[in-house]
Each structure stands twice: as structure tokens, then as C-alpha cells.
Length: 246
Image (cartoon, rainbow, N blue to C red):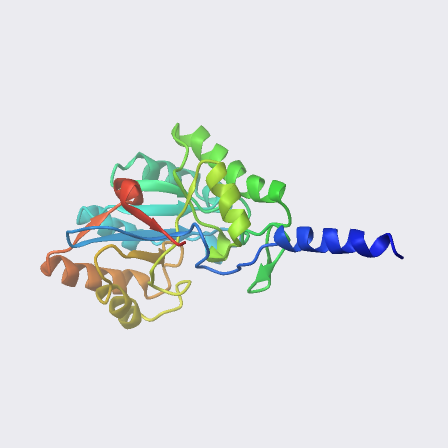
């Protein structure tokens, strides 16, 4: 016992120091806004995949962006790509859109398997890397370009997983405005969320739920914001002005 206690006293602080201290959408290292002296906003759209419902495509929404020359960052999951290969190829070929990485299996990014919304997170550093890189490699194979930005399924992280992500060459694309709450908001609520945004905000929306209020809400909000003099940017356009959480 006299040998065990000093060993325990040494090991416990080491183990605690190596356990994540943060868990959520807003943890150290996540990019949530960008600096701008202009009226600029970043629209970002997730495409999740994994089931028929979450592998759908909101064609009206994307066509509205195209018709009105509205650039956007599209965070696309590997499962959605595999369900919609031709649509993905068309989106990737359009210079209005930046293709970003929404993960391989749409898992929260954790080093110890923490879960959220009953979705288990990655359980180790190696699983973090796989969740990022397997889809990153797929997108690079299909487009010739590795995504600069990554957003996990659920947009939840611990700070150690974020550090690993950045070591693997991606920025964590967080958000400052919850645009449609997983495509559950009404069109009126979506419009309200977006039109209340401030310059430099990153807005989180979805492009895989055509049955939702996202399209109508985005359409009305964009018209109003353009009348107010706002422009829209892709995240890669402002990568040198990204603000990360301390």
C-alpha cells in the first residue's frame, strides 16, 4: 500500500489532465464567426445522409441560390454523397459552392465516445481521424480537392478532438446562428433567425430536407438582407479572417 499510494497520486492527475474538459458546439478551436468591415454573412448547409429522409435533396433551395448567385459552403456527409453521386458531382462543379466535410458516419467528434442526441461519438483519437479523413479522401477523389472545413455530425466536439482535427489539416466549421435547428424550424422562424444575423456570422442550415421550412425561410431572408446591402461568402473566402473560440 505504501508504494501504491504515491503511484496513484502520480497517475490520477496525469489521467485527468489527458481527459477532455469541454463538450459541446462551442469549444476551444471551433471557428464560429469571421471578421468583416463589410455587411457579409456565411451561409452553410449540411447534408447528413444515412436514411432515406436524411439523404434527400432540397433542389428548390439550391436552385434559388444558383439563380440569385448566392455563394455557400456545403458540408456533405459520405453517406449523402453515396446516395446522391450525380447531384454531388453537379454541386462540386459549381464555383458558387465550396464543398466541405460533414464526416464519414455523421458522428460527434470525441476522443472517449461521448454521445449526444443518442448518437455515440468517436471513441478514440484514431476514430476521430477516420471520421474526418475517410470522407475527406472520398471528396478529394471525386473533386480533386481536399476540403478545408469540417463539421461533425451534431456539431458537437471535445477540445482534444478539435485539436486532432486541426492537426489533420481542417478547420472546424462551427456557427454563430442556428438557422433551422436540424430543419425543424418553420419558414418564419428560419427567416427570423437569418435576418437577425450580424456581419461576420456563420449560419447553420440544412439542404437535405425539402419538406422543411428551410427553403422558404432562406428565400425570404436572403431577399431582405440583400435589400439591406448584405453579401454572402463561402468560408474559404474568409479563411484568413476566421475567429476561433479560445
